[in-house]
Image (cartoon, rainbow, N blue to C red):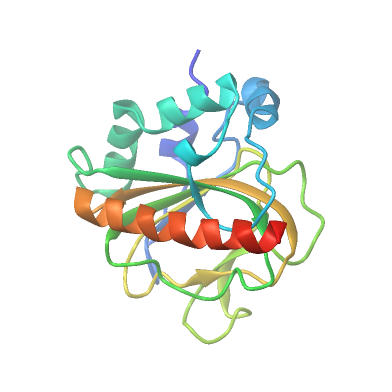
Length: 207
């Protein structure tokens, strides 16, 4: 049985201004959400990590396989009106957030579409809630705010206006990010950057 609910994804509203984005609650089918959540790998330090640098359980690994499969790519292509069929994907994980995370940015030009899928059981904190913004200067000038709760997906098409960020939060904040990239070389460069950054944060964490 499929883990991801692509019908719910395709039926979710799509905003187009100031950039193209959608928020989908229940993207992970409810009957499978807790099993997948339980197999999210343990990550003790902040930073984005390639999946290969972690040790996920089998249910989470099945989710990654589905997320990077042709059916999901076809659904995102249809939803965003851009052919992603032959575009390489980059998948990274975050397990913890530091006080430096959440600064306003648009994502790099190497990314065509960004999707964030969250794995947190409820969210009471004010910080750490993703905000989609009208501009680069004010976290309160938002068009949407999304708590990073289990099964919630935020996806947007990267542009010079795709500003997003969140208020500071320190602690466990789990998500998977998948990006459809402009090229394989761009994906390799981004992954290398994340690996180096994560290694430095790991050293600092255990120092």
